Image (tube, rainbow, N blue to C red):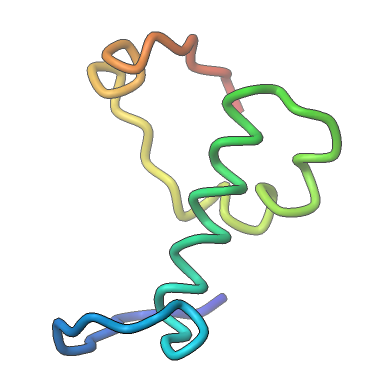
Length: 69
């Protein structure tokens, strides 16, 4: 996913009207399933892995143990 920079104006729309909201939703869903160690999370999370920066303070604040890559 060579997404360099995404810019869109602020507006209120339904998710079906904005591809960026759909992308944000699937990313959040994939990360949530990974952190929950839910079954079959790999298919969605693995393509995102290299793009995600986990800061220890953020992970600790969420009460989730960080997994090493």
